[in-house]
Length: 230
Image 1 (tube, rainbow, N blue to C red):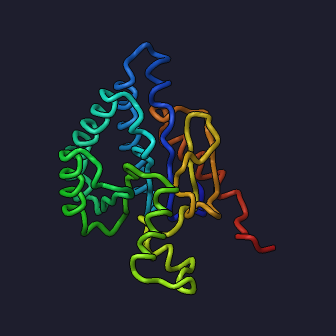
Image 2: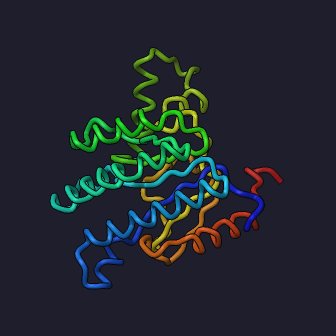
Image 3: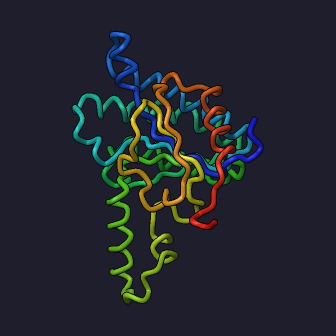
C-alpha cells in the first residue's frame, strides 16, 4: 500500500450507463451498481486514512437527461442515504454537499439536509457529494457573492475567491480519479484542480473496487508534485 496518501480524492464516477448497456440492462441498474462502488470506495478510504473524498454525483448538465432517469437517480440517492447515514454517523464520516441544493427535488433536499445535520460531528472523514454542481457556475457564484459584498478589485484575491467556493474549508484535491476511459474534467472542480494529479482508468465505475483504488494510489505515490517549482 502506498505510504504517500492523498488527503483529498475527487472522483468522476463515469460508466454506469455503459456498464448496464453492455449487460442488456436498464441504465437504472447501472446507477444502482454504481452505488455499491460508492460504498466500497468510501469504506476503503476511511479505513486507510484518507480524510476527504468528493464524488461527482449529479452535474448541472445532467438535468438534460430523460426525466425518468433523473427521477430514478434522486430516488436512488435518497435510498442510499437512508441506509448509509446511520453508518456514516457511527463511523465519524461527515456528509457535505457541493452545489446548488435549492434546485433539487424537495425529498432529496430534505434527505440531504438531515444527513448533513446528523453527521456534522464526524471528524474522521468528509464525504462530499457534488450535486447540481458545475465548475463554471461555482466560479460565477463566487464572483457574484464577492460583488454583492461590495468588494473592490483589490479585494478579489485567490483567498477571497476560494472562501466563496462550495469547497470552502476543504483542501484542494490531491488526486482526481476518472473511471470509464474518458480523459477530461467535465466541468468538475475547475478552480480546485489547478495542481491536482489526474488518474484515468478504463474501468467502468460499477466495476471499480478496492484493488483499482489501490492501483490509483500507487500511481499517485510514484509521482513528484512540484507545484510549479523545480
